[in-house]
Length: 276
Image (cartoon, rainbow, N blue to C red; front, side, top):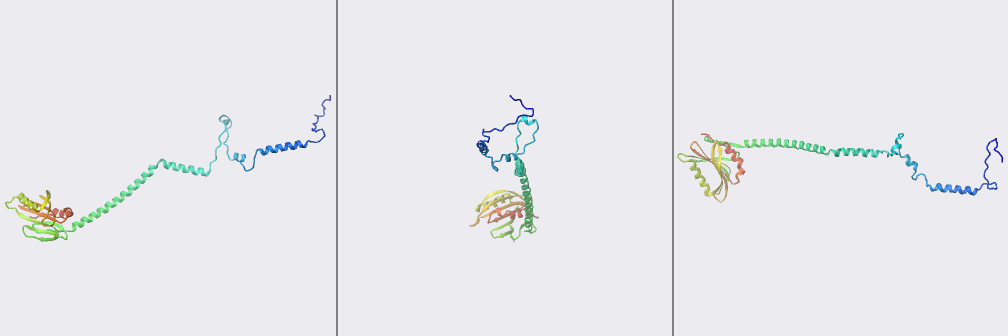
């Protein structure tokens, strides 16, 4: 047996097939197997590239020693400008939704202020109109004074002096007027005289109200009735009072409801005065 040479290790010999040539058929077969295995991986450019998917993630900083205890860190999906806008809009809507009542209260207060201003202006206009109307009523009256009695009456009404016991008659037309009578009582009782006057009205009418009122600082008797002297029905209001041993009668006669002439009657009653 021959020892190793000190000149170095022996050289390896290339294997041979016995005839000094390589087996090309075996190399071709190995290369075909490698190609088949590579094609089976189906790694194609542009189709679900793993490198592209990995590059789309930005890993967080890894703290040495920490991930070993807690496990692998979760990768975060990068924010986009669209997500940032949606997040800002959601925050604004959330803030508005948390306090919707303050917006409603503000609108209500504004409506109240506007309505209050409008009502104040309307009241001012109505006051001005009322003052103007009152001024017109005051200026649209005439005054009667014969030295014994005086009173105001509506402008445009006609005054006709009468003969005793009638003092004066004031008429708007032939169916709407009032008359004033004066009778000396002498020894006659005032209550008896009023009862007689009342009985005469009941002969052709119906009294539906009787009461008292104050005229010329004197308590007077009054009545309201429907009176039918002929074919037509009239409404009448009579007032009787006593002053200086004389009985005074103010009798209104209208072909309309007494309420329609309330302001005209008030003018006369509130201003009536016996001078003597």
